[in-house]
Amino acid sequence: MLFNSYEFIFLFLPLTLLGYYKVVQTGRENAMLWLVLASLFFYSWWNPYYLVLILVSLFINFLIGKILVRTHQTCYGSKGMLWLSIGIGINLGLLGYFKYANFFVDNVNFLFGTDIYLSEIILPLAISFFTFQQIVYLVDAYKGITKEYMFLHYALFVTFFPQLIAGPIVHHREMMPQFMRKEALKPYISNISIGLTIFAIGLFKKTVLADGMAQYAMPVFDAAEKGQVLTFFEAWGGALSYTFQLYFDFSGYSDMAIGIARLFGIKLPINFHSPYKAINIVEFWRRWHMTLSRFLKEYLYIPLGGSRHGKVKQYRNLIITMLLGGLWHGAGWTFFMWGGLHGIYLIINHAWSSVTSHWEVWKQFKPIAKLLSWMLTFTAVVIGWVFFRANSFETAILILQGMSGSNGIAIPSAIASVMANHMSETWLILESAGITTYIGGGMQFIYTWLWIAVLLPVALFFPNTQQIMSRIEPALSLYKSNEQNELTLFKTMQNRICWQPNIRWAGIIGLFGAFGILALTSVSEFLYFQF
Image (cartoon, rainbow, N blue to C red):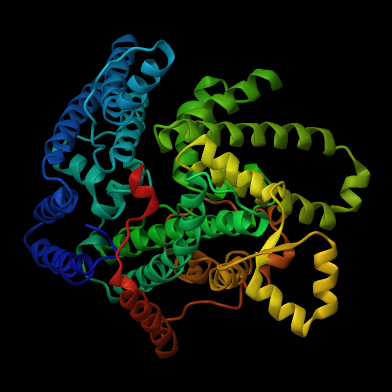
């Protein structure tokens, strides 16, 4: 069941919410049971068979977690490490089989000329997210940071439907204390108004902005997959369209998840904080999929040694972390390449920062340096998204060739004709510079670049949802603001748009929600659901 569907908005969500506040009158445990059953129904909507998988996973991890808590309390260090290894091994084994078995067999057959057959394995929904979340719990239980003795509570922690399918990846200590508060048992009008506001904004981002942009990204990548040569504006139009489709798709999902949880009086961690405003790639990863970045840092990069053993080993740890982070997103070499690119970006960023930190000249030109840094960071991210979206290396390379200008620069002949008639001197200059024309695609060209021209300033200059709602702390904040990591230019609208519980804002949010629902005629999955 999708957040952006009629059955979710008009049936599942209101019935679950009303049922929760009705059942909670009979006791907290009954309310938790109601949420678990609702979440399992939500999960099984796609494929009831995989309900068995998540239940078995829950039961095994809960038992191992109890053992880890007990061994920590009795100081059985080696025994605890053994059980932690078993638990992580089981989780990664399940993830590896369902997500990577076909990928592994295909590559073995390609490399060694074998003909090993493995029937296609359908990826269970959300397995990457609930696997990582349970690994986090096991590690925290081993360290004595958290504990859980009731299976019902543990099941709610893992399956709570707002964050089950595509995150955020949460800690037990972030979630369960909230369910135990008295405030979580009452239908406060403030929580409902805040939750509906954030949900409506997220729905608008998804159905109007992200899905609206998708129709201009898909044809370009499909054309490249068929081997079609792309010119400069075609390739950049497709790459930027996907860049903003993914941005508003993931931002929209994050908002909707936070809004839904808030209806139940629960604050989820912020998972998305205007990443395209980042002026370096380190800052980008502090803002993009923030709970995944936290997981990779705390449970992979730091255990590998982090930055504790010199620059060379730090760079090694960065590249390993990002390569595995890339593979987590999908079983394909394009995802591996995307992760590797970001690993290289991070290495360059750290090396450059070390060198320029002592340059007085660099500090004197800081505003210009920050602008150039942002432009370079944004361009690098867009190039990475090409590999992230493409189904093959060949497709990605064709698009990148077009973006480089090696296939020439061309515009639709209809647009060229208009320019020749009304801006003849401008067109003569462009023509002398080598710009050519092609037949057809004029409206596609215009709409593509109009959407980009609208969404780029929205992503850069407008405050994000959490900043709009900042007066009432809409979610758990993982982001520590640093004024140096954002251009002053991008802050022009930040404090001018601030949500208030009044009639004016009710009307604005009502319009967002109405447009979001009217755009539901063609329902599409969130892009992160495939991971």
